[in-house]
Image 1 (cartoon, helix red, strand yellow):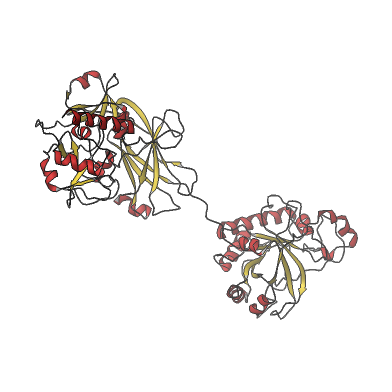
Image 2 (cartoon, rainbow, N blue to C red; image 1 turned 45 degrees about the vertical axis):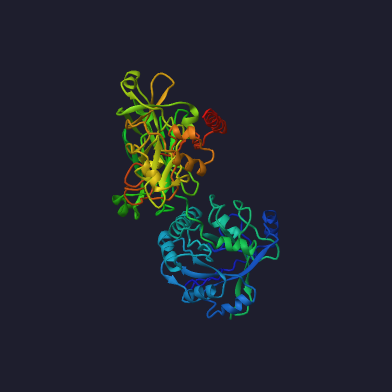
Length: 587
């Protein structure tokens, strides 16, 4: 490394020194300055370059007005430029050379000539400020370690440590260390903890250079101080990079920022809803998933998790987070409302696949009980339960037999869902035991697990011909007592006794051939098509906005998700079709 150090020059040492002893006044000793005998003793510690190398140079104030286009044309792919020395000196050609190398497509680096006797942190700040922010194509800053300033090894080592730590902190890159084998061992004391730092060895020898024992190879080798390169008006230091051009480009590429874990708060947990907010700092404006576990933390055999998306807008988040859409809310599962205390844990899911972080104020505890109001309707069998995609965790509560028996009972719950809407109209209705029941909003449909891709479009007259019953409740309310029977708590149906008109039966069978008259007479519900605005409901809304988030599929404690299927089994359809044929035969 050429030393333009305000009147200082490298002392050429022409006498042999002890392997770990100080040589001269504390100047770097290169291998070309060793006696043959000492060089032979150390030959077993040599490291050679690999099969692929890249050529470069380093320059200082001793190489003014360098023509970087000619240097690049001469086959030099990189250059390392002296930027600073001590706490005040700046190479007067640094800015010109820093820009010139970049303009000519060369990989560039900056170095600081280190003065161990001067405040190391102040030197690091001076260097980083002069070098500026590093981008793609810029090598990490380099420490040029050649002199001791009369200090002993321990003091030099302490100064080196302070300098490199400060440069890494300020620049975000682990600096390169330039030194000589004997100087590092003798004048710095061969300190440990530097094996991961890129190493540049100064050794003007025809063979392979010696390297300190903590490194297994060198990153670069300065093999000559008297090279001649087109575009440089003076002799210049020649360097070789130990690797391919792609390897050198990788070293000159800023590392990806470390993955930051999600953060947020579990703000509340009640018998109605669980809510809070979560954000991933690596994707600060995007909504992220949140996993909420009940009855224990993630991984607990007793815990059941629900996945929700933290993308609801909350005004109080806009300023602190720089983005508003990070809130989440979900309805408290009905199975939790049994009068007992239940743990609630919430985790932000890392968008980059890193560790999922438990949110602040998690866990919380929730104790609640369901209240029953209305009438009960029997869900006749598991097939019907599955056809509605009911969840025993989210939708179903266990109550006392006395509370269950106190409710009146009406017609059984429909075997499977079917929805209709009039041609050209937005309102969507559930067909239930010969009545039409308005589905108030897409959120209500989602909480009922209704498949909005299966709307049946009929004539307006056919819709109007159906008598009207109460709108569908805002969410399914299933209960069971000590026995196996499961009921839907519902509003009473009008006492009309009207059957589904034959025209609607024929229309629905034509639209859905597997739908039989017997199923329709039992009150099967039709699903609405996706994307419709539901009649007499407020305008379209984002998922979860303005109400608890739609119920997500329960996940097992291992993290997987499960959901019941929603279609009638072929066996049930076949049986109902057989029933219809028998009725027609008897007629």
